[in-house]
Image 1: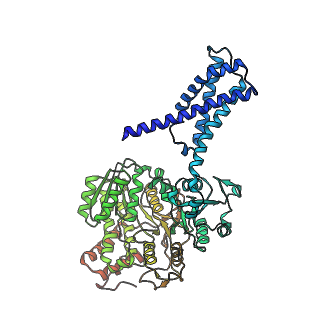
Image 2: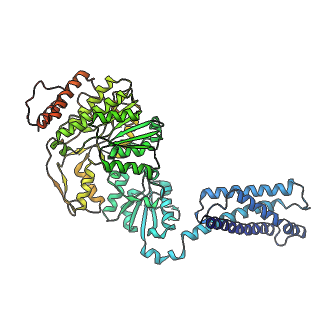
Length: 632
């Protein structure tokens, strides 16, 4: 098969060279004809007949050396035109050298006008032929009215490189079933112009008028870096006319999933229209400290942990130790890293972070240089029903892993925390508060390790996010359940959360708490309405929204800083530090001693009351009555 393929390639290149040879000969002949119109003198006619063969042969050799036959002509672009210009100029320069500088048997030199005309004609014929082939390929006769009648008419938002690529791909591949009919772009210089053969019909502010006039079957947002405000504007105008909208992926998504552009055009997602610009960090730069390190990630199969694995694999760690107690999740993340991302330096460790002996064994065996502790229980109502497991996993488990990292002299330890640890009103939030205290106290005990906490709000699409719940409810026809009409939450995407975590791992000297500037909080009911609209339906008309009332301990508005914490700017854009009075290590030891006693005694009510009191007042209750009900 390889030999047949090679023969086919050679045949194609030879065919291209033969065509070019004919074009070069024609250009050389026309140069003489145009220069000596109406007739060529005999001596120059002899020169033409005597030199045309080596002129053609010499130019073809130069063209071949410049790679003009290494590409199919239907795929030529601006870069290929640069190569053609370079090759033609080199060939004409060589022609001048042969005729005027190197002694030959030719007694008459060609006029300089012939040399100039030959260069221009050769350039026009060689480049023109290629672009004609591309034009005919993209506009084949069978893609005429019959093809257009069955194809979707596509309006493209963005007439830049992305939009032009989309238009070219739609024309080139009839299997995509789309025909580009025009652009919408906010650049005033492009208004009314034709780009890639399509007219720029107006700006996004004029989109309603353009949609009413063009009546497209689909709109594609071809601006990977488009802000949420622009996407929301496009989605709103299109949904009002029941026109589906898709968008190009971001550069990060393209690089992560391959470069097949049209296959990666996706539906507009809720994170595209939240109205907050995502934090963008260069992972290769901010994660450079991980190169060559053994990196251990707990909760590696979860939403945050798996994304940590994906992004860290890009910076070249020596090895990644994936720790999780969920077999299927651990299997899937390792398979993805090895099969899809070609990163084979992984070790999958099935272990429970609550098992102090097992965790110590892991640290002794692999001696990680950096630890990202992402393992946590996060579902608030479930943790309210299971407070012992919430505290054992989130609080005691964090203390176990942090202590193991300190004993093994790990360089950096990063705790993934949550805004629910701020003035906590639930067992889950209080358990994460205790986790933050455990890390702070461990920093004082093991000063050679830099312990850091990263705190942020809700993560879109994570296992604890409301978004997957809303999607399932929409698929079932509704209703979407919202606990309170005025409830708000901070939101961010999984990739930007992980970028923050990676960046924070190399900031500060240890003991810091870093918080992402997350913009304005989003009303949950507004999020529900947007998700219904993105599904092509209308809120209340097609899908109902039901207010079911707040659950015990659920706050209307989450906070990012405790009352005793002072927000301070850092050297990194949009990353704040929460500065608070230091905790006494002995106090933390006393608090955890009491908490662990209740955990291992199985006293759920007493544990909930004690943890709530600790989180609220930073104090260990002097006494508590076993079986005391948890505070509402």
